[in-house]
Image 1 (cartoon, each protein chain N blue to C red):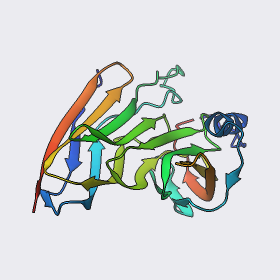
Image 2 (cartoon, rainbow over the protein chains, first blue to last red; image 1 turned 90 degrees about the vertical axis):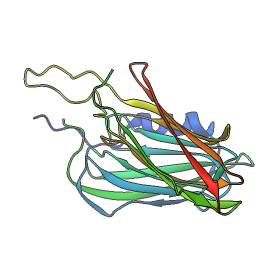
Image 3 (cartoon, each protein chain N blue to C red; image 1 turned 180 degrees about the horizontal axis):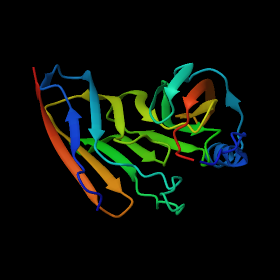
Image 4 (cartoon, rainbow over the protein chains, first blue to last red; image 1 turned 45 degrees about the vertical axis):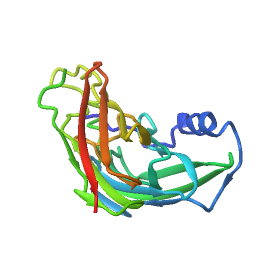
Length: 121
Length: 109
């Protein structure tokens, strides 16, 4: 087994720039719920909630590829929230960025401690 | 095509008009991340479901772009508004081009 370097991936910043176009991000308006400690990085439950958002992007900044998922909400969505389960390679920050209907952006992050990594490195 | 792919969806049987319902979906899929190696040290090629959509009577509810960091057997939970009786249509798109879909109807109580 090789140990992956759990550094802040430079491409996480690229992903954010691609999503926001370099716009400023507010600190409020989005909630990201993630466990403080995840025993198994293979399946970490997270949920995001950003009222009024059209899309929410989730990034795992310490994964070999930082992208996790992008949720796009249509007219049939009752709330701009979703839950899923993700893989984390190691202890790191999970970041969620919401694109609001008015074109502004909001960002939230959560630090997750991972005991067993989930990328099989 | 990945073997043993089976979508499972939980939708209430009925709802009041305009009510928000919680929908839970899970599809059995190995979601090979493309990061793992086999015993000989060769990288196992990526094979994941890269997109999930849910529509209600033709209107988009949620469209999710998924990347390798989504866990095995991807689970997604979200809320949808039910303005009238009709059908939810769920579709998953595999890296290999396969498309899996299922539908659930809901009545107005």
